[in-house]
Image 1 (cartoon, helix red, strand yellow):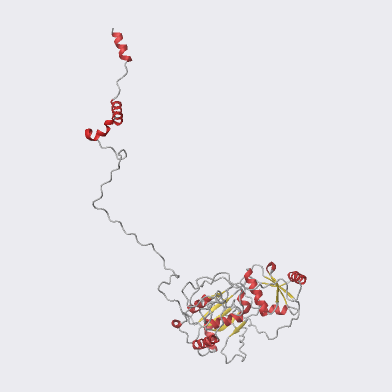
Image 2 (cartoon, rainbow, N blue to C red):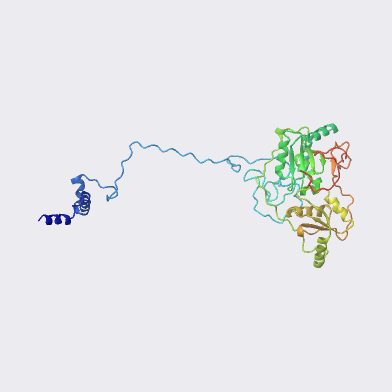
Length: 427
């Protein structure tokens, strides 16, 4: 009997734990219909996720005020002309991007962009025509406006009022000595674009602190240094008192006052150059197509007259081409390493100054032909490599410039010496 009782005790399963009873009871309560009475019987509040309608939270009786956001910082813009009047300048000449590399006598055949003023919208009282901002008629709609004959007279009067009496030789030597490279670092560089409009403002800024400023000219404009000197004096109303190669000393004048300087509005960007007629035509005037092709082949085979360095001094290039035409009809100039626009501008200047006929620009070469009936130019005048601009009492009556002494030191500290160089020895 005791054995049976032991076996029955071993076979009977152990009682379920209490947690299992609670789990089953919870499932039963959740499935029965009496689950809606849980809150009334057992004070049970279901979670928000199980309630049919979400309960709105109690509003905060004391809400924290939100911080007002500051307006986003907006940097000042030079194009924002709200409430400002357009700048008015009394300068008696047309505003151009470059005064040395553009001529009012050459009319373009088209524009590369709409007539957007490089001075900015509404900043200047002159209208941009696509080439210049004329001083006479601000409402001009054509590419070129006729220049008022009174403008040249007005420029002459303004220049005389600023210059006063001419400098004496001793005063000129003192000013030139102050502009020596070892005495001052104040210098303006005139490069491939020539005398630009914004460079006029740089010159007047330098004249605030010194009576004369040193200008270093390199690149395409140095082919015609006479034009560079003329435009500098005409647009700044100053006086060139010394020149050695591409180095100039520009004097501001006896009665120049920095506070009474002219208003020069600045160009905010570089305008696109207009479209001009082609320099190289399909056939050269007076020759057939076969003769033109043969001449271009012979021109590329001719030994080069010289090799031009990038951003060099080309003041002796025109006399060299003229001398070469005395012995040969074709001249080739090696321009490897130069920008295409640079040697095209050089070829255009040679065509007008030598004069000659452009043959080709192929393979970075300038090939020019002297023409069938070539006559050497005898009355052509070119600036010498070195000269000093003295007072007009000692200068020739024809208005030409006077050469300085060859033994005197130049502004850059070198000795005066006539030589053709391409700028490699300049710093």
